[in-house]
Length: 200
Ligand SMILES: [Zn+2]
Ligand SMILES: [Zn+2]
Image 1 (cartoon, rainbow, N blue to C red):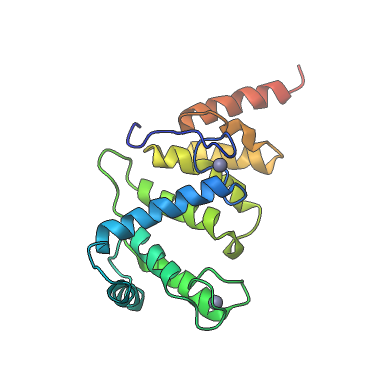
Image 2 (tube, protein in one colour; image 1 turned 135 degrees about the vertical axis):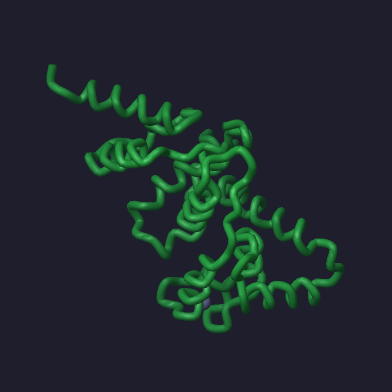
């Protein structure tokens, strides 16, 4: 923990960016996170034409390229079929679907001092929360809710992840994440919630 700070969103009062995709401020936070990686990678190229050239090269072969840079490149290159950012259009747009699927060839190197797989979890949850059209609707709020804790450097253990899923499948409320600063805390709350729900 402590890799990234938990900060409260002015728009939804949750830890950022748990309110995506419904909270515009949380969506803007995700976009800024992605854009910062692009600027760090190619911001020194002085013309839009050069940056577009890099974006096209990244999309032609995203293997080994950091995932935020790939997602920023997708946003920069309009889909030839629907005109929106590549991979961000409607589900019926086949070129967008292909671009969306290809984004997962990108690299997801973990930051120092996080559990292995933390960055992969951030990446997957970010895509679900930011471009929810590609995923079952019921997945979206859960994946968004995990993002602040993942950014803070946490990762649920398998039993924690299973307990959270079972709780939600049983009709539990995502409010269990509100203000929690670790997945262990969420799991402790679940045990309390389950106990409270049992007949005494
Ligand atoms: Zn928000
Ligand atoms: Zn499209």
